[in-house]
Length: 367
View (cartoon, rainbow, N blue to C red):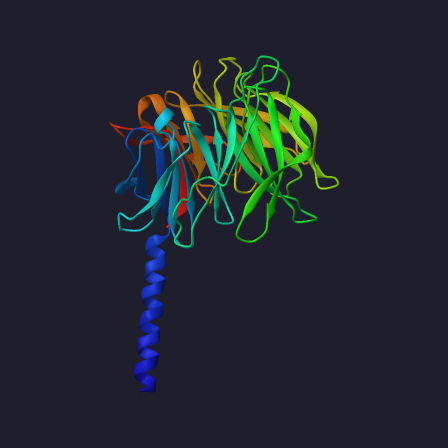
C-alpha cells in the first residue's frame, strides 16, 4: 500500500510538473471593444499562435475587468441609452451574472474593489458604485456621484482607480475628468457589506486648462502618479502623499507623449518591474511613446514605436516579455516583444484580427 501511495504521489507530481511546463509561456487574453461580444483567447508565446476560447455576449463591451477567485469577468456596455454593467462566470459555462443599466451614463471604464464595481460615466460625468451579491451578480447602483459643469466645460469622466495609502492603509478613489480638467478624489468607506465614496476635503485637483486628463498609473510604492492627458498629448508626473485622510498631489514634471499634438493620447502603463513607462497616441503618427523612469520618479523619453491605426488600450504580459496593443481602426491586436533591458519594443509581425470588433481594451493574465 505504501509503495502504491508513493507511486501515485510521484505520478501526480510528474503530471503537475508537466502541466505547469505546458502552461508556461501561455497567456489568457480578454479583449473588449465596439461590437457585440468580448473575446477570451489563449495565446502561446512560443509558437505565437492563439485560439479563441469563447465570447461574452454584450453590446459595445469597451472596458473589462476580471476577478480571480471565484473566476468572473465584468464589463461596461458603452452604448448610449442602452449602456450599463454586465458580468459572466469566467469558465466554460455561458453563465450570465446579469446586466444593470446605468441610465445612459455611457460608462467607459470600471474597476473592482471589495465585491463592488465602480464605473466612470463619460456621458453624464458621473461615478457609480454597483454592489455584487453573494453569487457575484451585478446589483443596481448603490451610489452615483454626478459632477457639474465648470466654467462652461462639460464633465466627462474617463477613468477610476483605487489607491491604497502606504502608511495608513486607507483607500482612496481617483477619477479623471477630461471635460473639466480635474482629478476628483474620494475616501472609500467600507463598513463590510456596503461601500461608500466620501469626497476628500480638497475634492479635486486642477489640471492645466485644455490638457484633458484621461488615464493614470501609479508607481508600485505609491509615491508617484503618471497622468496621461488626451487633449494635450502630455504626461504629468506628481508626487503623492496622504495628509489628514486626504491625498495630496504635487506636480514635478510635464513631458510630451505625442509630439504630433493630435489630441488623442489614450492609455498609459508601467512595465512590471517599474523601470519603463509606455503611453499610446492616436491620429497622426500612431504609436507608443517609451520612457525610462528615473530614481526621482521623473521620466526620460527614450524611444517611440509606431503601431497600427488608432492604438487605444494596451497591456503588458505579467512577466513583462510581451506587449499587446489594441489597434481599434485596424480591428486587430498587435503583438510586440519587449526588450526588458532597454524597454524598447520589437514588432513580431503577429496580430489577432477581429472582423466584427473594434478592440478598445485588453487584459493579459497568466493561465
